[in-house]
Amino acid sequence: MTTSKTIAGLIGPTLVALAAGMLLNIGSFRALAERVSRDPALIIDIRLEATTRSTIRNSSNMRKPIPSSVSRRRIQSLPEKDSEMTERISLEGKVAVVTGAGRGLGRAYVELLAERGARVVVNDLGTDVSGFGKDSTIAEQVADLIRSRGGEAIANDSDVSSPEGGSDLIATTIKHFGRVDLLVNNAGICGSQLFEDATLDDFDHYWRVHLGGPVNTVKAAWPYMVAQHYGKIILTTSVAGLLGIRGQATYAAAKCAVVGLMRILAIEGAEHGILVNTISPAGYTRMHPAAVADPAWLKQSEATMPVEAVAPAIVWLASDGCSETNRIYNVEAGAIQRIAIVMGPGFTDPHLTPESIAENYAKVESIEGFFEPGPFEPGQIPATAKS
Ligand SMILES: NC(=O)c1ccc[n+]([C@@H]2O[C@H](COP(=O)([O-])OP(=O)(O)OC[C@H]3O[C@@H](n4cnc5c(N)ncnc54)[C@H](O)[C@@H]3O)[C@@H](O)[C@H]2O)c1
Image 1 (cartoon, rainbow, N blue to C red):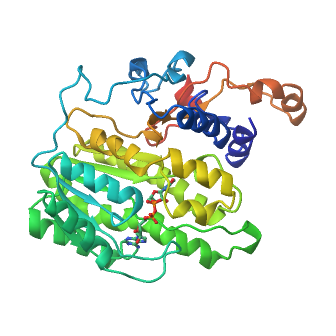
Image 2: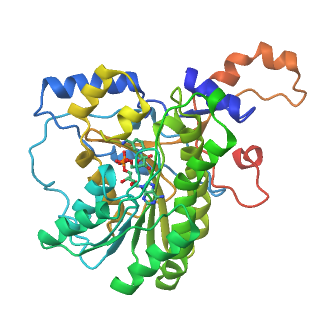
């Protein structure tokens, strides 16, 4: 509730909350993590309830409320084998570019993408966790590893926070593989700093990597995807930005900007066959100690949040069977959940006064009967879209 209030406060009268039950806060994660650590055989069902897809569009392109039952995630033991319902997903013939793939989550992504047949470009500048320094061997080592397993991979050490770096990465991809089917913007940096200590230069430092990276690489890849009339783009946000965490103003602001970018790329890409989604991952990497000082939480997340548990979502999003776009997915510890921005019915009075707002604040606050607005056509505003 506190989170909803905070986000709602940021956008004025619009009541915003993440879809009920799809929230994954650190408290709920702890409970889940405890359960998993007690029972290592437990695998959390990563399937979204099928009814999530039954969200209905009406003539004004509005989304109807999602039944609250779809937001409940199910936990059950599953055998360690591919689903019997779905044919094994192959990415044979696809070319995938992953930024920041020399370590952590990105490395897990390229390893699984290559295992599923994709030709991969392992980009990594090789910075320290704060974004300083350079080490070209980081990307090389991962590309070597993939090749040693029989996969196809090349390394690239471009700095995606610069336009030249974005161009170089995509030019290298085209030169070697002739096309680009999937672009995963994963490169990132992290630290911890109270807002009162952060300067505009600090914000700029984070924006350049987290938002500039996607802008620079997507700009370079876009013309190729348009020409192919095909392309998939995955951006990376974070619960730090979506939900908030102390000490992360610079990081969180940049991570939420990515969601705004996705909204527009999804709209403008649709006519070109370009699908754009955002992943909010959690997997234990060097970013965790850089962001959170709590030793107990670090120990637990190291034990229960492997980076490999996030990679299946990347392969699924890359697959031809997935036609989703403009979506945000939280992926961690074997769970995948759609995160949505929803609007409550609120309180309406043509003669709205400060006093009537105060008197009816319970209605303003409530998201009971929420709906998911957007995307809007130019000139359409949320209030008219609602009717
Ligand atoms: N680990 C998590 O739980 C978590 C949670 C939420 C979001 N994320 C996001 O996931 C992504 C991956 O994070 P991670 O935890 O694997 O971090 P990581 O530090 O292990 O890996 C990030 C990689 O990005 C590279 N990189 C940094 N700046 C670059 C640049 N300008 N150009 C090219 N490469 C660059 C680094 O060298 C590094 O190898 C980041 O965007 C991060 O913000 C991670």
